[in-house]
Figure 1 (cartoon, rainbow, N blue to C red):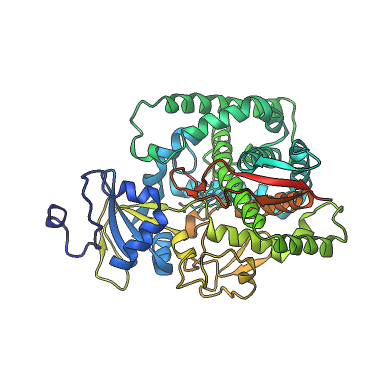
Figure 2: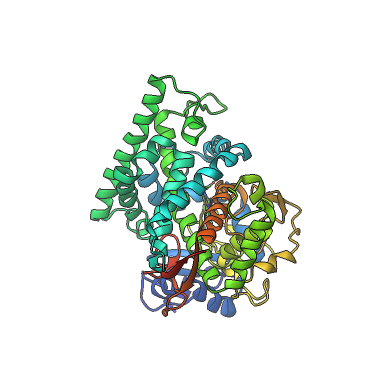
Length: 473
Ligand code: HEM
């Protein structure tokens, strides 16, 4: 009753709770997908729940996603929602610690490292890193290994080699990997609520941020001192940028943006690679078809991979899409409501101060949009024509219609904050998966398919994730 007294008549329905302040935090964090679906059945696509003293209004379904992703800048703010989490890790002056128009320009600065020419150079490097990493799975009769750990270590090597530059890749086996782990420990959902707590992980995070910035800065200074201008990595392109209004994009800004890219791209890609291979471990016939597709396009399974040929492998492309439909690493996207906003087609007015939440996974596993929604079936994409919004997306492999915010599958978000790394992620994932499949046959252990751990920043399989492997003859 107390919860109801002050409720504004036009506010969306509220999920009741028993424990003040904590609200629905426990049931939400145990399984947010179930929480969203159970409450959708009771309250419809738009409703409010309380967690740790904050009000969240989730907007489900394609209209809900469109509302969150396309709300006006004056009405909602991503910066207000994310800043306590991201600024201590990324650093000041970039992403959510600057005016939105500067973030939009930073996304343009980064585009350079995501061009097709850049991808042509990256594919052989990623293939080589993958082969070299997996030399350690070297038992000729096969064995059992930790796939999650392997993908985490491999992706940090491939991303650093391609985006961060050879100097940083060279340090990856020593100092930088440890700094990355300390930063990562300080990049957890708890930080959004308790940024003021003196947790030991926050001290390690702050020290790792400082050392990471110094590492990037040293590389920049050496490149400048030696007049090195022929590098084609992201760092080089960020060293030469100025905002349109003449404001300098400083070397410190460049270091901070590099850290942001490292953090944004790491777990998202490594968990996706891990899930894709786990799904494939259950479907050996699909693996045969993927190898046949490679052979068809390249002539032989010994031929090196290249960016242009990867574009002609639709089944591989659909394996990545389907993995991201079922296991998107980011399951809650937030915007702080800055002034009351009406949800179209209803009486609801969402009050100022609420966190507006979109959850792509909720629509991605919704039977209203996908038949047999929980089944991994990459071939479903062969018959899906996505075009309702008229917009299109280019994942780096040609334009795909339906890129608008009403698309039921939005693992990379939509609108002004849409991911900048999606083309890179596709290139990286396709190269890693196809190289891995050439090297090994894998199967699940007696434990079967791992469940989802929703307590981390990016949803991951419950650990440990061991698989049986056998070198492919
Ligand atoms: C934003 C997903 C890989 C850099 C986002 C958002 C999603 C997402 C859903 C939107 C967040 C929001 O609207 O609040 C993914 C997935 C990936 C991936 C599923 C891989 C499978 C990458 C990579 C990079 C990257 C490889 C960089 C190299 C970023 C950045 C943003 C972002 C900088 C912030 C954009 C903004 O707020 O305007 N990503 N991402 N991501 N992503 Fe990714």
